[in-house]
Length: 593
Image (cartoon, rainbow, N blue to C red):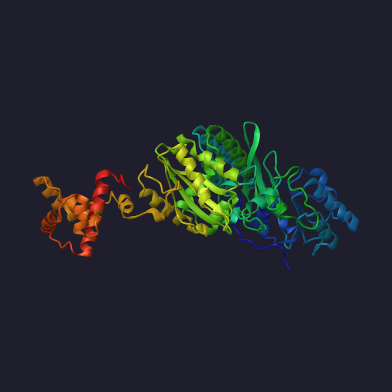
């Protein structure tokens, strides 16, 4: 059974235009060209290495063709000079493999009608792709078509490299941040790009053709088995293309470009397919032989990255180094801010993406209790120094959390606690620190949640508490923060004070009474307040107002007439109590809230 998957075919006229964009021509690409496809190519050995680049095509009928090669050649032969003895065949293949030939193509028309067994075995041992042609092929026409493609591809590569340099230069000149740089790298390469620090926390991830979940699941473990490098290289079991990122002459972290499928095997496609295997990034001659008997994931995926990818990653690392000097805010803090905002605004594509991203940042997401904390300050958070102070406080106590500004004067904290870990003492310490920085700061919390997907709800609850709390309001005894259970009617109305429906309600219920007091110099509104505060007791209202019971009775009659209501109705008294409370909030800005 053939190891070569049949590929789509194009007409001869399409040959020179079929060069793959953005990468070198590979063995698989050449075999899919009409000029070779007409010979019914069959891959007998080395199918996993058809992503090797083809630097040139060499026709030979010599017994020692390697002496005329430099590496990367697709060797075409009729098989006429092939040695008879197995030892001679092995020597022939060894020389081709040692020089770095891309593949050996033998025509089964003249001397052979099936490939010799020693040749197959030798090619498999050395990892040299062996391709047979069942029909006669014009080798000169093959060289003409392939060389045209190679030369055209080289010219295109120069132009693409120039565009890459121009793009990154423009990013640097406008002071682009790390998010812009990583995003540009992913867009230019069509690969997922990840920026990590020295402790293997993924600070930025820009997926391309996949999800954050696929890119970052198990990130720290996968990253630690990918060795550090001094220049862009492919390494690790998944074959990542990685480059170091420096800051003030010291190694700060690295940027990684991931292959399309970490465990995938290159597929054979026509030259026009953008996902065909690309040129390997290795030291030594192109197409250097792999270990005998097969290859690991890195050997397979090395063929995915081409020179353009290397250039993109080199410029990415340089642009990130410059951005690190320009932007004073530590990138870990920036990553926390971004992750928090995405959680609060529910911008993740899926819960799995959110879990993978936060886990890659070092936050536990399984078997964890989450709690949202908001801190609203009078001055911008960046001017208070509160964010780094809280981050250091949490780090010192070993409390897992994300800390970041959500708005100019609002700081968010997401605590990730063990189920049995008490949270009140932690929040209390955070609240006290915030009040030390700003005595009028409002610290509010949401409710506990056990699913990361529900943290947005906890932040919404904390935000509602903050909206219902006037800056400088007296705190509950023994507490430095506010929570949902603190929100009563007055604080609820304070949160809704700008809603015109609340304003209209207060005016509709009490407007005529207020107008009467203004015209006649009376104080019926105060009498109504005392009556409602006394739970509908005239005696209690008289005591609160320092009036006789009869006077209170007369005033209540006047109030009933003006408001056209029965104050003996519990529902009516409740409505008036709400209107009076709303009026107080609207008049004094909730000073009592």
